[in-house]
Image (cartoon, rainbow, N blue to C red; front, top):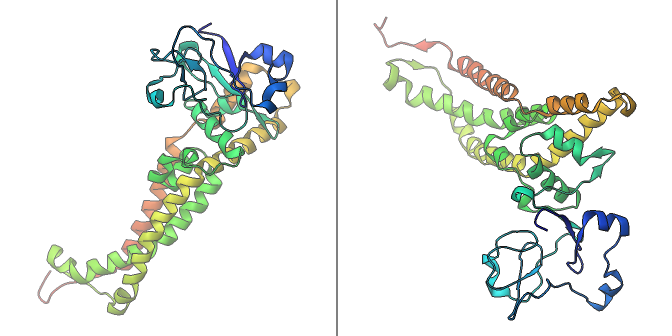
Length: 305
């Protein structure tokens, strides 16, 4: 039926009701796997079948959507009769109500994916899918975090990863400083007189020595953002597990009220723009302080007020 809760065998592609699988504990065709058995969708008419690129189910060639998982078949027209991909060697879950898809349940260090789902809030399924891939040892770009590429350490504060965020923010500031000081020295040497009619004392030797360092630091800044992109979801997974385990110690399971516990998870894991904005304000304030320190007192031309 359309709204049935279905799991797919990763070896032969046999679909089963989740309850049936739990009762049996194995694929009904497990004894035939060694012989290369592969399940095909029951024939409904003449002609070759089209394998679903998502779950491997065989469909009528005229069908636009898979009869099992309801995903589009358009991209599979060249692979008629071939089994679809079954990745990861694990049972694949399909929750077909409303066309939505839910990540299968799993536990990590006594933290359930259901707790993570409440903790992460909006977009939790996307994160949980990435977490499963990370736990399986995947280094695919599919587990990268694009917002972290754009915002770097500030994304960590947005997701309440304060410890990692502070380390990365200090590292960003350290990388930023040589290039920023070079920019201030360049302004004093070349632009201040033209823009304001007065100059600042500057060091020509410092300007020359910082020029190549500033070029290297600009590459390092980009590299730090790449690191954040690649590692943010791994750090988020570790942070989620650590925070929920800490909550376990504070509130033993026997003392938890389900509704209150779920609300607490949602509160502790909710993203915070305020924390990210505060981190950005501190960063800008540090740069402003460096600017004032490096500029020093202006030098006016003779006769100028």
